[in-house]
Image 1 (spheres, rainbow, N blue to C red):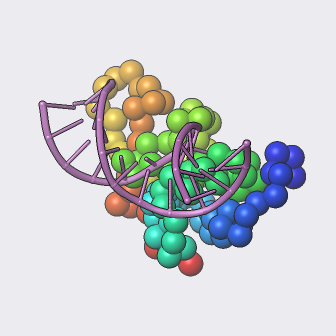
Image 2 (cartoon, helix red, strand yellow):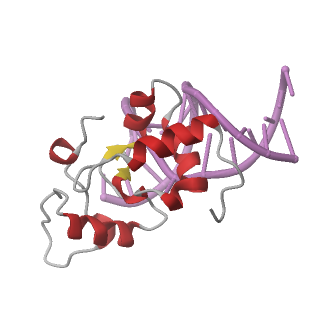
Length: 111
DNA sequence: CTCTTGACGCCGG
DNA sequence: TCCGGCGCCAAGA
């Protein structure tokens, strides 16, 4: 509801898959496209930007483990709450923008 | 049909 | 680590 003018078939596929990502696990934009068997990272990102409001968008991140730039702080908050494996932090002062998900441990195998 | 726009990915410096 | 550049795919004008 809200902002979705009308999700395309490809968009619905993306949203359906993202909605199935278990809490505490994540998927990269590239992984979503790969699991769907078509499309690309950019196409997935485009869908999330438009219709991602209704799905666990924070569980979809960049290939380097970084949170989506639109709301990296909010995403980090949710990951901390869900217990998502994060990479160790070196500095004493922790900046949200520098925190990343440990993809090796948090990546979801798929449905 | 072409051109532009992205919550991208990877390589190089 | 932070840039910059090129390739990638779907949707809309």
